[in-house]
Image (cartoon, rainbow, N blue to C red; front, side):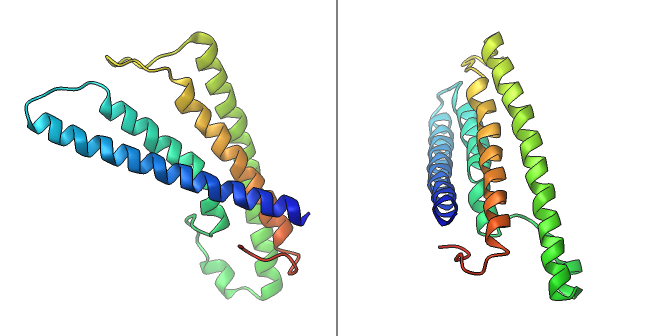
Amino acid sequence: MRTFVRAVDRLGDLLAVVAAVLLVAASIVITWSVIYRALGNSTFWEIEFSVYMMVASLFLASPYTLKTNGHVGVDLLSHYLPQRHRVRLATVVALVGLLVCLYLTVLGAELAWGAWLRGERTESTWAPSKWPLFVTMPVGLGLTALQYVVELIRSPDPGIPAHE
């Protein structure tokens, strides 16, 4: 079980690095675009490229964000609950998060698969395929569901380090 937990945690770490690289790439392209346009030139691909990179980074960083408790959460209720109820509430919240991620993984996979089969492209001049953007949703949320499983495994067992 420890090997599984470590593997999922490391995969989340790797995806966080990939997401950071995508954000840096988007930032560089946007900065270049502003300078390029200020010099009187025109481009047609940089905004869409940057949007693709930012959306991909959002989904791919999701497992790492869950692992490091970076997701937005309202803990007012759990703050006032006794410890045993906090653990139960955290378990219920994790199960709901897991189910939502699994549901969105299936929907995202259907969306990406449909875009692939239909050869969907954006309506811009550049017209990239839509499926690479869409596929980041089931990948990121599927791995976030896996991270929820790890968090459920980790919480009742104090022998597993929280976040290595």
